[in-house]
Image 1 (cartoon, rainbow, N blue to C red):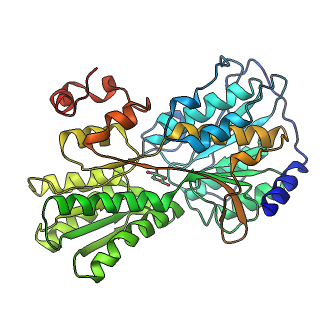
Image 2: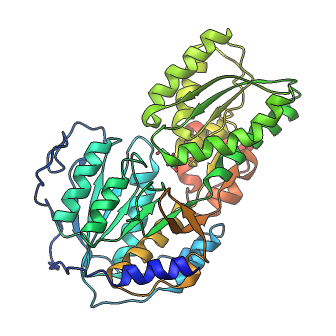
Image 3: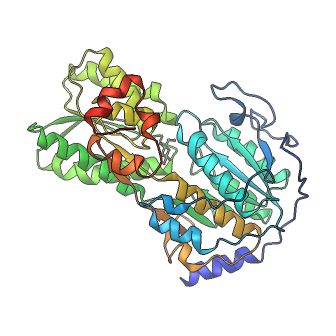
Length: 429
Ligand code: BGC
């Protein structure tokens, strides 16, 4: 508690340079920063995503209608809801610039949820402010360049979801040296005292939910001493380590008791679905296609593993886990190709980040209710933290979770190919 207050007090004494705020501007290419990194942020890079991935965007917030982005729509994320509501102060006169730096585009959440949810909330709080947005497309050097460009272009707060949790420590150090507070968004930034806040989910719990769901399903199917394959996330993502640790805390006692065999385990560089497909293919070859269940750390890696199993002719497919409640993941669950996913309500996460960014920008005291005294150690300091609660989703509760929460509508899920699966699961439009 005391540490948090000291930290917040520290934040409040940062002298922040107010950036000029051009009311009518829409998107402006910021000044390129000289850097040793291979890809300058102002230069286009090859990408499957349009604009956002390579070219940082500066967006004026005046166009936004200041409607309350109803955090109350999200019943499961009560902690952030309280936190977000606690400091909602409409300060029409505030101005300044914050940067949102996201890690990749192969996982759909960043462009479909994190970015729009953050921008909407921040624009509502600060109609005259600017947001610099960059997506690093899974390249830590690109992200470093993007962060340097953001600082050069007047960012007064960095909201950073690091590609590489350890390497990003140097970004936080640079920001601190420039008097710019940093919010570690979704992934912790390690080994730096320049991290002011961390907003994420209980990530070990994510791994536990995945593993326990898989174990329960295999038990329910009556599989004795099942053989599983583990496909973990990127070794540079601190969250991937936490998911993995949570999953092992469920699996390992069963392994010791001779009740479960982890036949193959992979860490998947860049969380790449293609790489996950290769890993699964290797595992199937090595195991002669004898696999009872597959632990996949997210829906993207699950899509790769499922593609490999289909290509190898496995039918029926064994139960597969996932995370993110991606639209394609939910559809695979309804179609019986994927067993479960983990739903993380991104809107309250992004809105809490926007609220904190606004408070730090305007030097408004952050209320204690935001973190409730929670901290997570990043190797250097205890970082005041907001940790939200993840929820396991199977066919049985798609309706009462992601649909009830407005994360996806039945119209989005129940396209022609999934009409009968939707009907079976009781999803009606
Ligand atoms: C996020 C997951 C995401 C993964 C890949 C993790 O840090 O928490 O939601 O699926 O990165 O981007």
